[in-house]
Image (cartoon, rainbow, N blue to C red; front, side, top):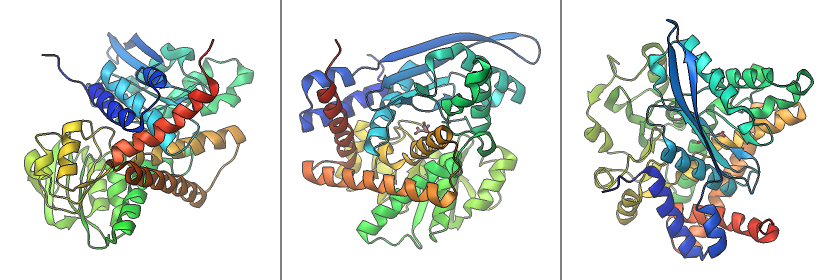
Length: 420
Ligand code: GLU
């Protein structure tokens, strides 16, 4: 039997939405495929003098609405089907929140925790060099994703600019977003995805008359998205009950202080291994935590036919990309658990990437209020479009979100036609 991949999930989600909205069958053929798939094998010198070969990817799904856009992931599970799925989700995501970008994603298949800082730098720089003109500030703009951060973006921009003629360098700083603020990054980009998750939760709570003060939540993944979402929810007086990362899961029925936990993880490189203010629990117990909100903020395929029946929450707010597979989705729907789908819920990151890109092009620096305020407005507008579309088509929010994106793309393809 053929092993199903996360890309099969995308294909099924797409088919469901395309059928329901009666997407033009010719345009459907186009959007069902990725446009370009770049796979590179490249050598890097290790600290001990050995050469190691790495495999890197950049998949560009679609650029009808603007340049290709999406993160770079460093993880052993990175492979072509995963990157195809992640690239396709980026196309929908940008279209849903109405920013002028297409969709792409990339990464390197390796475990960065096993490499030194200087090896990581050389891996990143050589990957950037090898991608060459497959990325570019008006063509395809990478950003952080799982296990990549502002430092890695700084190495990418430095490498990319170093390969350009001197007089063109200053004009290309927007080749990546998520840079450190001093190197042309935007204020507020670091927390943007987590902040966006919290903004969408606030919208949901407002509509449901649900009080976030005293509400309980738990989070899977305590990297950039999970830790920021947790810390920002604390400001509402909500209570973090459990958290999980690659090192394991922890639980405290009286609540865990996300700021304290964040400090601990910064020092100890993970959640488990002696955090004194919570008990370690196993994965199944963690997923069955009784709480109001679950925020998956790690990897794909976490909420499935096996785990969806065990969730004990009112809302799943998808900080991760693709945490719920189609079987999991059907079970959540049946059980009346609301879902804020990834392509809406975690779009705060790429929205602020767009703001960073604009600031670079205009040589501007916006302040945090401006960034947060504008991001919130874009996200809420996306939220309202998805909500209204779900009502109009009497469907779930993920399918509705797809319909919002597909409608935009269909319009553009109809206006422009197909060359030649
Ligand atoms: N990796 C993030 C995402 O999945 C951000 C992408 C970006 O800013 O381009 O949305």
